[in-house]
Image 1 (cartoon, rainbow, N blue to C red):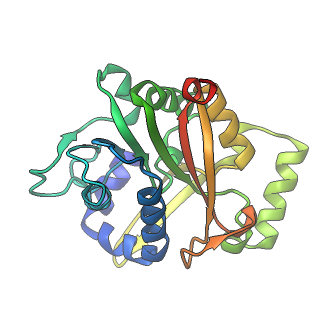
Image 2 (cartoon, rainbow, N blue to C red; image 1 turned 180 degrees about the horizontal axis):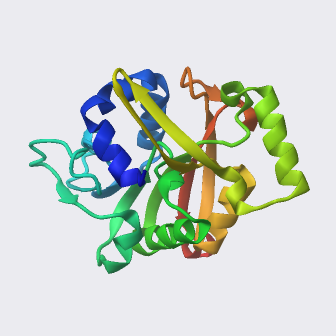
Length: 240
């Protein structure tokens, strides 16, 4: 099922799906808030769902302009009078002329953008749309997260990548099963090396990386212990 159609289907139970990962989601939000630069006034959230997370993030630093990009009409929240909603896919951002101090793309939204060339294209649009001193936040499911996927599956993934690297090695089937609602779609899980290559190709610099336990939300020291949250900026700003 196309990812947008899949989100249309799970929209009625999405809040319960998110509750399962509340500790992780809350910690990512806290980290984003801690890294937003003082004076930031605008935020673009890509793959915003009902917009609840982006609205909480925007409220704390006093951001006055909030744009929620969500292609699934069923997922969009109600009464979003404090935000502008773009009903479009991330791949369509090339048609937008704007500038944002903060861009967020959270909970492996990038992993629902296929193939790799499209992911690079979206990251390039982030680089174009972010302000010169702005920040971009992307968290992804880590392919080598042994704490979540288990040691055996992670070892097999690692050996496959070493023996025959292919960008499609990280393509996975995603199944959501909440109460009586079940649907399957495509996704992608990343390695740190892979994401760094995507960022370079898009003209972005990784400023910080956090490893966050997918079950508890705790910060971890080793990559195999969690998912990956990246803080990025324009490469030109890094070179200045």
